[in-house]
Length: 147
Image (cartoon, rainbow, N blue to C red):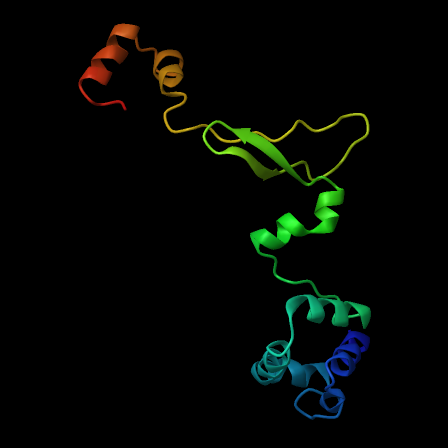
């Protein structure tokens, strides 16, 4: 919005952008997008991500960092909502996985589970889905077809 644009200019210490004909009306900002992005990149390059986020949000500019996996693991809001939950992996031990997106009082979500390990369901697939007999599975194993 125009109010957010003005807040961005002031919060970044670039109030001069408000009078700059390249950026003054929204159509000019769109036409000169590359120049505006370069100017914003120069400003953001001088600040830490948390500082940028806090400064602009406090000014009323709707921003959020592009989060890395480490950011997600340290996010206090996600921690409060128990969005990331540890699931026990048979080889890796506890691994953080995303839980349910919504929290319901009467229908709690199941805890997250890890994916299968390599070959974990081979016997079940061969026997139950493909209908192979135990002898056929042994023959495939001996022939080196299965690991």
